[in-house]
Amino acid sequence: MLRWKCIVSEAEKVAESDFSHLTSSGHPRMVDVSEKASTVRTASAQARLSLPPAVQERLSGGANEGAREIFTPKGPVFQVSRVAGIMAAKRTSSLIPMCHPIGLEDCTVDIKEVEPGELLIECHTTVTHKTGVEMEALTGVTVAALTIYDMCKGISRGIVISDVRLLSKSGGKSGDYRDDGA
Image (cartoon, rainbow, N blue to C red; front, side):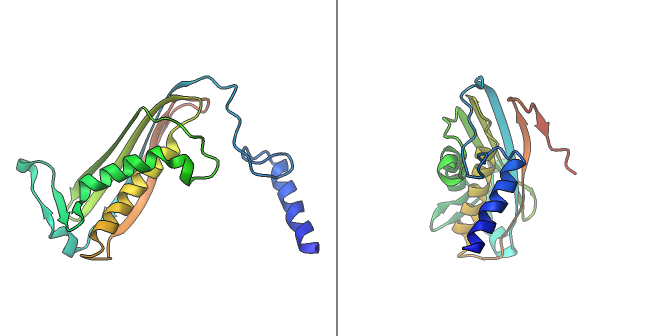
């Protein structure tokens, strides 16, 4: 019983520090956005993938033939990953507690090879709503990266996903943000 009182006491201390997702009693809650105005909000996120040589060897195509792609028995890896990222962005509120469900108006996932064996994935999201789309962009880029891993793990499990980050956001009370690369 003493342990339970300690946990409740700690939650009350946290609630006193004005966390937006906690009630004054320390209980989790969604942020109330009912009084906010709907504005256009955008966000872009990025992830980096390092491909081991066995996966690099599977890249086909080139600059003159269009985008390079990896084909596995599961299908065209980058195309499937783009779709997975978009689907994940649309379902963010089902995956991340306290995220508001929003109807994305635009979502794209771009995958480019920046140097041999190094991919950058970017997810760009747009909505006119009372809350932002940063979590949707971050979820989209992360699931796209995980899909590449899943589709290529039969070739090599040495794929490294790193540097998942918000690149930019616009709109809303907190204003614009742009990652300075530091």
